Image 1 (cartoon, rainbow, N blue to C red):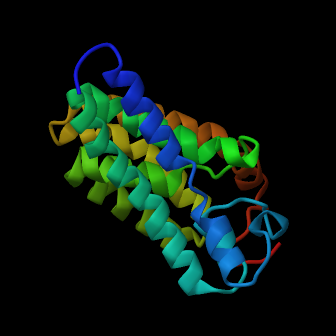
Image 2 (image 1 turned 45 degrees about the vertical axis):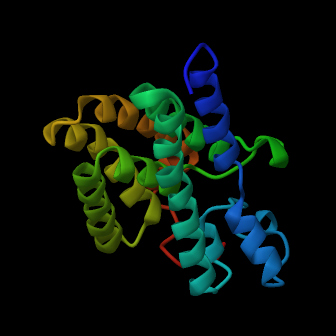
Image 3 (image 1 turned 30 degrees about the horizontal axis):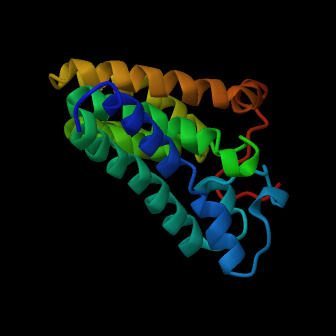
Amino acid sequence: MTGPFALPAAALLGYLIGTVPFGLLLTRAAGLGDIRAIGSGNIGATNVLRTGRKALAAATLLLDGAKGAVAVPLGAYLAGPAGGLVAGIAVVLGHVFPVWLGFKGGKGVATGFGVLLTAAPLAGLAAGAVWLLVAAATRISSAGALAASAAAPLLAWATGRPMAAWLALAVGALIWWRHAPNIARLRAGTEPRIGARR
C-alpha cells in the first residue's frame, strides 16, 4: 500500500492485533472465569500463572508475544520500514490499552518482546536472555521485565539496528510506566515472587 493512508493503516492494524486479550480468552475458555478478578487483575501471562495453570500461562505468553511478532512485518508490508516501526509501537499500545476492555490491558512485556524479536532478532534474543537471568536470580517477573526492557535499546543499537533501538526505547518507556506499582513494591521489598498468589 502506498499513499497518505499507509502509515495510519499500519498503526490501526497493529493496534487491533494488540487488543486481542489472549489471557482473558484462554482463562475463560478453561472455565476459570475472568482473569481480571484474580491476583493482580492483569490479563498477562504472569497473572494467568497465579491460577496454577502453567500451560495456560505459557500459551498466553506465546500468543501475546506472537501479536508483536506478527504486527511488525504486516506493518512493513503496508507501509515499508516505517510502517513496521509504527505497527510495533501500536501493537503494544493495543495490548496495554485495548478498546474492548475499557482501555485496561496488560503491561506489554511479552508483546514488546515479540516486536523486538522481529525488528532486531539478535537484540530480541539477548533481551530474552536478560529477562531469564534476572527472573531466575530474583524469582520476580517484573524485575526481569524491567531489566530486559532497559537493556533492549542498547542491545538493538549494539547489533546494528538503530531504528529498532528507538522502537525498543519507546516500548521500554511504556513498559516501565506500566510497571510503576511494581517498581514501588520492588523498592519496598513486597513484590510477589513468580507463581505466588495474591
